[in-house]
Amino acid sequence: MRQFNEYFNIPSVNTLMAKGVVDERNPINLGMLGMFGTPYANMIIQENDFFFAIGVRWDDRIAEKVGFGIEADIAYIDINPEKMHQIKIERFPKFTLIGDGATALMDLLDYAKKHNIKLEIAQWRQRARELKKSWPLDYNRTSDRIQSAEVLDILSACIDENVKITTGVGNHQMLAAQYLSMQVPNSFMTSGSFGTMGFAIPTAIGVHYANPDHKIIAIDGDGSFRMNMGELHTIASLGLPIKILLLNNRSDGMVLNLQDIAYAGIRTGTERQKDVNFAAIAQSFGFNYTARITEREVLEETINTFLEAMGPCFLEILTDREEVLYPKVPAGSAYKDMILGPYIKQV
Image (tube, rainbow, N blue to C red; front, top):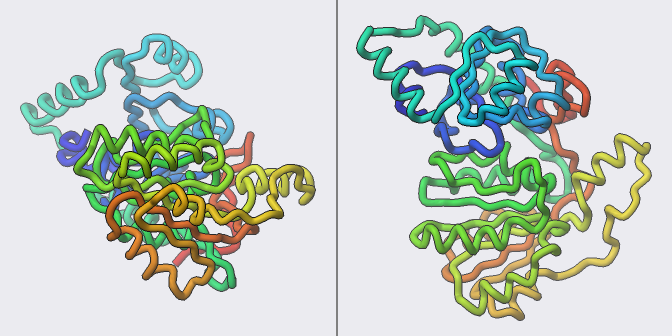
């Protein structure tokens, strides 16, 4: 994929599960598209006239629920004949190939080099750069409470090719997908459409054993974390160098946001009135480093200390329960109906 795009230099978007396949620092890689995609990814998909889909599932968060209504010609490569048959009926692609994506791309690349095939799309590349630069992600910077987006924005500056991220499921997952610029494949491990809460910590253990020389950071929300918090004992007793970043807003934030929209602010079973000191629990299990912060003034310094600490590490950050995940495309709507919220603005 990277060799192919180094040659053709085509603006790209990716699904949640493909983070890191193309270096997200590239100014013409516009990141994740879909229901909670980046503003610029969801904008550029409305403008393109040719869409080259490689190994994608046309997931409902991208295609059906958000109304994929683009007018672009479609080319599609996939190894699954059943999926190809479905897409031929639903999307009417101009070109399809059933086979291994890597093999197909290398064959196309070899052919292009042999016949000196180039793409004259300088204006389109510039449009991609402008969109990415003009519509940055943003959050409530004036709140007296720490924003989850704020935490992940700070963390993003600390991500390099040696870091592997796992996440639970919820707003923290989508914010991590939006803000963290992954640079290599298989560096962002998350539960896709299955939405398995509790995924972050046991997955982090597996990722550590598969990649013992990498820094492993498990990002979780308090709702998702409760599902598998017993794995703190596993990590501590084995002395695994896994870092757990817990964004605790004392709620099931994504469901709470949806309740606010669908039921005029009536919330049922999504708020937790009693606070729990999860960092103290991690300390009792024997984590080398634990901290719990509520004040923005120490946020960046504490994140850096957490990242530099050795052995099992646990950082709990109390965040704003009223923070809302943006952008979002409401169910059944199209990309043109994307809601940017009050903080994402053109610059």
